[in-house]
Length: 481
Image 1 (spheres, helix red, strand yellow):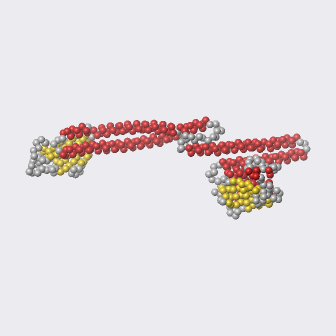
Image 2 (cartoon, helix red, strand yellow):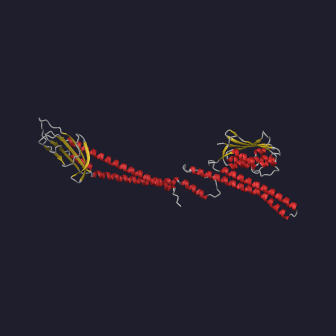
Image 3 (cartoon, helix red, strand yellow):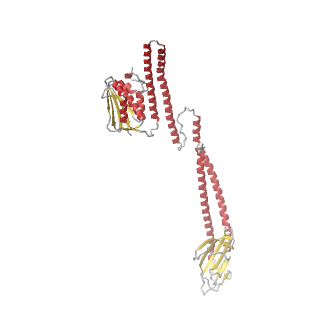
């Protein structure tokens, strides 16, 4: 059997990897941006030195001269934290100043355009080079000022362009980037650890109401079906708790009805069984065949009553169980007209025994109802049986089925004594019989069974005086949805 996973560990198993992934992506992005920003900053410094050297180039002597800005180079070398190289030469290579053999970029050089690229100097030292080429400003032939204080080179022919190069070793850049990267990784690791601790603590605190709920349910007695207290329950768990409360309410109702059924059964069957036992003892002691036969007849009558009460109580319990079922569950559809006709035929012999006028009026089209066909037919049979038993001999019992406002109506009219106002008000109470039922067989469960069945089908039972026959009219109303 698979061990159920903890909700806490399921949350952590999803959140922690997502957090690590997001922080890893963030670290990679920040490292990339750091490299770009550091390189841009260093490139701006290189560009400044190239511009400064360009301003110190002179061709007034007819050749190439550079007033070396030693302070500028020393300051840049201190800032760069590495070796700095410069090279100024004519495009033809006949005049050059500074460190020789600095590599040129691939491809032609545009005038005034700065080029940045990585290469190696003297074959083994990685350097970052900034290169710019421009046209030389050649002096006029009329003047040639002295430039003895400047190092110069006098080519035989006047050059057309000068190339300025400044190179910086990459070691300083790498050390700077690595130090910042290490600090960033340390910061991110600290953030990850702190976030994990806060996340675990938050999940533990958030799941405390569930632990409280678990402990409360464990401490409860098996017969304690009170609703679960929803105070401090998280909103995500509240629907589950509500569903459990509804289930417990249904179970509590069912348990209560089972207890009521047992109480009713013990109350209603104890007396007939005691009487039956007494009659059996009397019959065993009696020697007169006539007295014995009379005792047996009394025993049969009592047994019939016990059987009727038992059947009605079972029907009542079955109807209540149908009312407790999920109303959203699919119910079978059946023809209410056919069910009513079968109920009428089932009691036809009883009606003929009392010489009743027994009428049935059904519509031409079928009346389809969703529900339990046997239970609905049980309700109709109970009402027709009551109408037959309470109607006088040669009286009338009329059964009809009709439509009214999207509802199906089953009406049972009889010519019996009917029911008084008090009896109508308390109709359907278990084991209660009206004034007209005194002296007649029965347990007072028929109308209770009918009302329970009808309510289980979202319908209603209406009892009133019959305008047609003067007795009682029992009307069953079922919605056709």
